Length: 420
Image (tube, rainbow, N blue to C red):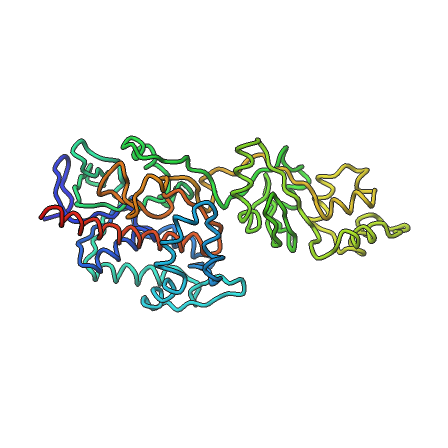
């Protein structure tokens, strides 16, 4: 019997996984490997589209740092995320990839990548193995909620379809990159079922600066990187690099602080971080060089000669400091070491790398089953946790998918006991 019944008919089948990203596919793998019949539904024409996008610049699967440091990256959700990662840590994920014919290596930053840096071979091998294990895929099936009888409803190319599984895993993603399927359309559907869902917010995102950049700065420097700089904001302090955009800032160093910056903007309307343009020099050294007599040389030539400060860094000083400060060595040195950069808003969620918010973990039991909807489990980015880039996002998606799959198995086993 076809697992999908047309129009208002409903057919029963064992387990549905809704969402063919890393979390959904991992749940499907766990279930199929334990002998369960599994059918995967996804709104897109093919599986793993966001995974493929993530792999365009090199698929960062996980991170090699010590476990205690690794789980600290999940901040306020560490206690809930840690059990998933203990069960499926970085070593287990690398071994899993090796089982699919993908060897990995640790980069200079500690990040873990496939040797060929690509996502496509890994995904192809994974889908081939899942199909070999009997997993069936139904693409272009968009989840649209539940029927009155509790059946799952889907929009498909052939019209509305409904299924009534014995259990379902929802792995519907967040709301970043909606063109790849993660559009957050599931939020009102779950809220209608009484599920506590936190507002979806941009994470690992760029920001707009207050009052915008000048046209001069945008024309000459948008898209250029700030290299070898450091930023400080609240408890955050780190060296790295980021990029100037037409409206503000983005890039790895900004992403690392984005949760703190976003939350501060939400609370106070703006957030100001300190930018150290020369983190390898002490304030006293910078002050001494700025105050060194420059004779007939221009200020730009003087700063380039004495401090190797030019290009976008010098332009930013002109952008944010009044003219009198540029010619006061004490004020100039202080700004070089701690230039205040005020942000007014996070960029729209569809531009973000990932999202915060989602199904609150308190709305789930220990099996990742919704308390408000028995036999419905959730996994992946649709859950209310966030992490920085560096392999932490994918690692928790894989691990939560595995945890949800195992949760379904425990649920089915307990249900069978109660039915006897």
